[in-house]
Image (tube, rainbow over all chains, first blue to last red; front, side):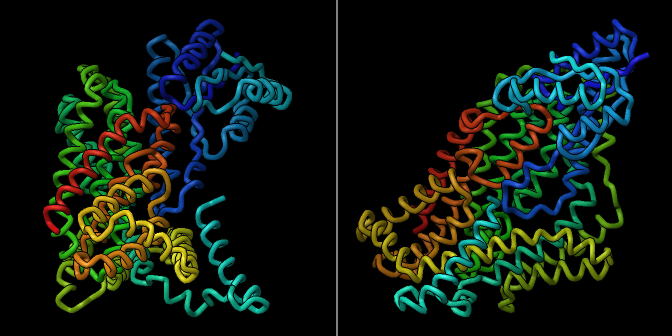
Length: 140
Length: 414
């Protein structure tokens, strides 16, 4: 049995990718893993007192986003695992795919200005992911 | 480049020009190290340091999460009431914690609450940001412009709060009314039936994490507030009150000091020092005089016109750039105008115009305050895009309304 990894941030644009990953898991019978990468680098832009444990706050928020994704999967009869990592998406996605023995990775196509990747950038990254992890990458 | 790096680069450039350039060209001897240190307002630096230590420990209690979840329970699925409570919570919290801390603690849970009730999180998060910027003007420690100008005027905590209260209260009411109206469509679409699994998940992240620490922080926080208010009797600077509170809490809680010192955000303190030195250099070079004369020419001899200009120019600039360097740079202009406009002599009107303009103008765009950038970053982390225009849809309306409130109040008061 294979293992599908779906990187998600939550929010409106991730819904489509989550639904596709759930459908794929349902069809193939593969296990499904949702991954949330907590990235606090947006704080690098400000010179204000940050005394809060931002990583913990983001982890809590990520846990909730993953619960939403898991609930959506459960509605389709798919049981999904949830994983949270801290750092940059590219590095953590690559590492998680290797560590979890992932056979298939689902990525969302860039939507609008807040997307993590540019279109061409995403295709290059997908090729790199495939080469390094030997997992099949699908761009939805 | 990070703002702190830019501020330090500016300060070092001022010194290098003075010492190296000044050796060959005496006219470049603008400001040396010792004179530059006199420009640093150490009351501001230590006040912020004390509050940072206090906030670092307070934020570990989980009280704000708990309060936000209580708001969710109290509202019983009424999205409008929930929005109103979150606005009040953000406004009041930001009066005592800096905006970034308040929003870093409130926004993640607010996003989850919004998702649970099925509305776009921006409908709650943007009003929280707007309320935090307004609430920050309520006290001497709420927002850096208040701290900087209040310290410059030698205002006590109580003295400041009494003067700021009318504008802040009316402005918060304006934020609540306008935000709920601007987001009426989103709020009207809230779900009635909530997922029990999501509510349970929400609750799991909203527990008070350290009751003993909360008890100690509350007692020391109350003592510190009493010192802030009562300190005026002993001419106790706010920085001493803040450092006393922080030290008492450290002595009582006995945290790991190495960790505690790592949690203090030194970049902010060096940012302040760098900006004070840089602006000192600019002031000594005569640039501030030139700017003050330009504003003075526009205002003529009218204090009212100068007040209106100060509120709105400060508001407009603070909506686009960080209000900390702006406030430090605008302070000497307020000094000069207060000394040259006959009716302004002995009146704090222009300083209050600067405080309200810089604090309230931060709502104009999402670049107007560090808290705004933090909230937008947190929304992006949850997968919600926030465009410049979407923030401005609410921000411009609220900033304009609150700047009008401040202007009217200052014209009546002075």
